[in-house]
Length: 251
Image 1 (cartoon, rainbow, N blue to C red):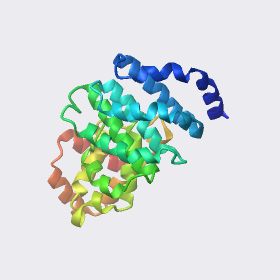
Image 2: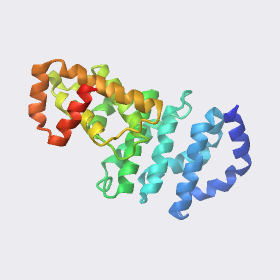
Image 3: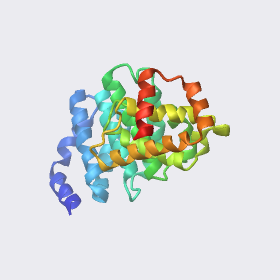
């Protein structure tokens, strides 16, 4: 009912926002318009797809925008497209993942705080697409996805990223564990860094659940003392990370 009423409210004013997506508009206008269409994607359900001819192309193009605020708004929208339970945007997502990877890999992707947050929104968008849609072959993307971790700048998006990370670890995904479990030090480092940077907003149910899953993974790994000691010897944590690790294991 809410989704239907949202679209009923939006329909008469949709044409007002469409011109704001044009490249010649100030970046603030484009950011604002993208945020509006992000809401259409997130809350409009299937009815929101009637506007895709208006927003999809500008949204995808905005992933390469000069302004990180615009890139962030675009990445958030693409992630929500990936979460659509009906898969109504799936035919756009393969190309979207390519653009997200390019955005994340760009030389300036971490040059400012704003750029870092936009980049982490893009990483979250990839996680959402891989987790919730079947639009791309996840096995082709997962090895690259893992190299982007850990992240901790955007605590609202990190639960989505690390929830998917937990899915992969718990499933013993070979791209995550590595040959002969060679990636176990990386997995331990990612988890400890998450807690050390207070990276997950645990005001949400997903955040609380994800932190518990990460903690459980670490505790399971620590049960094999010989292997775990070898992992820690490889990582050589500083005192802060050692204290964080001890706190997780004793919780």
